[in-house]
Image (cartoon, rainbow, N blue to C red; front, side):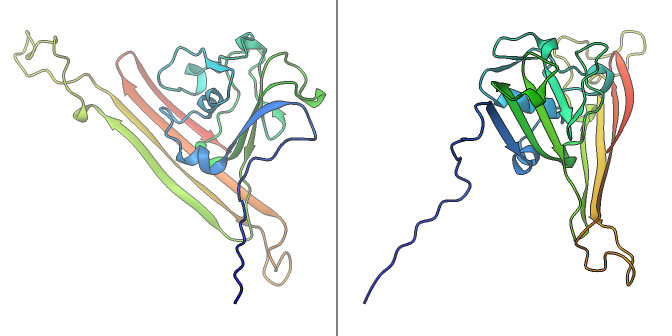
Length: 226
C-alpha cells in the first residue's frame, strides 16, 4: 500500500523578475464583484498601495461631472496617465477628466502602475492606469443589467416641514432618481461554410450603457458605447 499526496497552488502571486515596476492588477472577476458606488472604474485605482482618492466625490460620477483626480505616491493629480487598450484616454485639455469611461461589464482587467514602470508608459511623471476591455470568444455570451435608486425609498429630512405651508399637502423626500442600465454581447464572426466555420478567429464584443439621473440641482442623461 502506498499513498501519494500532491499539493498544487493556483492563482498564487509570482515574483516579478522581468521588470522593476510597482503595480497592482485587478482582474475582471474582481472588477465585476466589487461594489462601486456610481459604477466608475477609476475608483479601483484606490485599491493600490500609495494611491489616494482626491476627487472629492462620495459617488464616482462619469462624463462631464466626473474626474480622475488620484494622487500616486504623493504626485500631482494632473500628472497621471490613463489608457484604454493602449490608447491615451486622458482629456488633455483639462487633465482632470477622461474621454471614455468603459462600462464595468466591458472591462477585462485594470492594471495600476505606481512607480518604476518602463519607458513605454511615457507622457506622465506620476501613475499610470491601464484598462483592458473584454473581447469575444468562440461562443456567444453577454448580459443585461439594471441598477436603480428612487426617492420612494428615501426618508424625508427630519427638519423639513411635514406639510407644504402653501398647499397643506404632505411633503415627501426630494426627487431623486438614478437609472443605470445596459447590455454586453460578444462572440465569433463567421459565415457558415465560407468563413471561420470552426470559430477560431475573428471575434467581436460590444457594450452599451445608459444613465438617467434626476435629483435636486441636476438632471442628466448619458450614453456610453464600447
